[in-house]
Image (cartoon, rainbow, N blue to C red; front, side, top):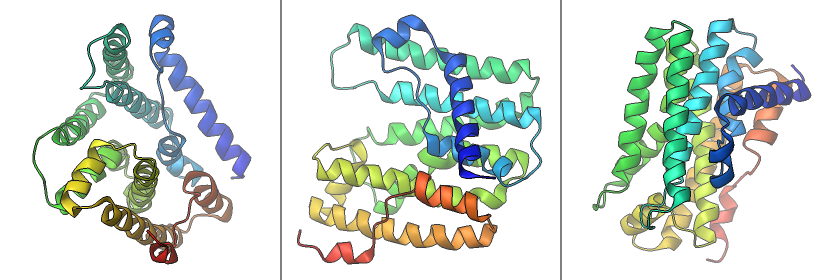
Amino acid sequence: MKGHQIQSKIISMEIEVLNAVRQRTLDQFTDGPSVRESRLFFLLLPFFDGKTWSADVESSAKTVSIVYAALHAHDQIREDSPIIKEQQLTVLAGDLYSGIYYQVLVNAKNIAMVQHLASAIIQVSEKKTSFFEDEIRPIEEIEEAITIIETELLMSFYTFYGYTEYAPIAEQALLYIRYTDELKRLQSKNYTLFLRELNANLVHEIYTEHWLLEKLDSLHGQILASIADCSLDYELAQFLLHQITPHQHRAEQLTREG
């Protein structure tokens, strides 16, 4: 499959998801629904790679995308800000999207997938909540929380439909994207809850930056190995490397003056 065909399918699903959840009043006062291209890419990866892909699978992939939109809406709520109209509408937006994805699955009579996905949603929500707790956890526990937040919904989809061969590369790439975003936020002093906890654990943000760079370098190597293991065709591999995970962080960056 050519790069433009991959991009076209991703855009098509994004439009379908946005149309399914769009609400004029909410869109006027909030950022509106959002689904990252990278998540759509990995939801569609089995299709791109020529695996069996039915209307039922397509519907479930769309539903997982709506779940991502719902969770994204709730993430926009600022816990330290006074309650204002935009905040209240953001909460309502998340609830709206949540209702839509259950309705989609129920209409498809896919009760088993509803139950499977509900378990993943609970895990993701619990790990997001854990970053609001006033305690310094071991780095391994912080990493585990980030991994579940970024990948559990997708892993649930893969497991349900038997696409687990793509789990390693999807996990590596989604973590790579998350840590790339966290590095940019760190360098711009735009601290997330994750960065605040990591800084507290590593004592100084210089060490946090080094930790992120080392993590990115390791993940990049793992992604290259996983592409080979999955035997992805050239066009698909190139799209993944240049459109989904385009920013390469090499080990020599660690030597720059800090």
